[in-house]
Image 1: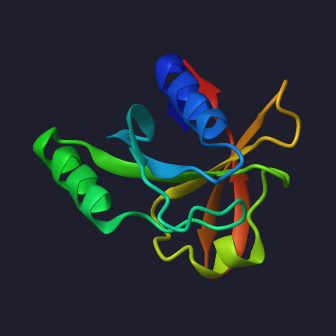
Image 2: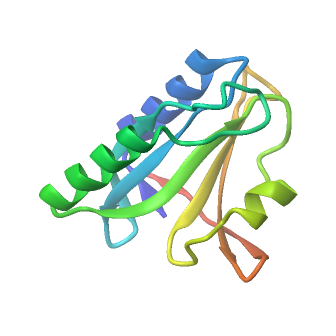
Image 3: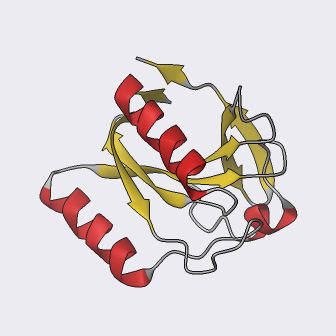
Length: 131
């Protein structure tokens, strides 16, 4: 997955600004190249779980379609745990065609961001290239 540098900085800032809660959102683009982030409100307002605000989620999908973009990834933060999918993340990974990007803030000075493909409960890390 390729991510424009300013989008990378935007989602990192989103994660830090939501502390101590998890943040969440979509990444969109074309051909596995992320060109737009859609921060979405975490209705759960907890440090270990997220649920998209349905109205914001719908608005993001409509905007993607209007701009000719595709959903590339769902992103969320792990304020207190490593950048790897939890059992719940794996269980809730319903779309095998998109990526699941996790921002770990265990070390606030050096956040760890990783992306995964999750299919049939199998997790495969994928490379992130910042461009």
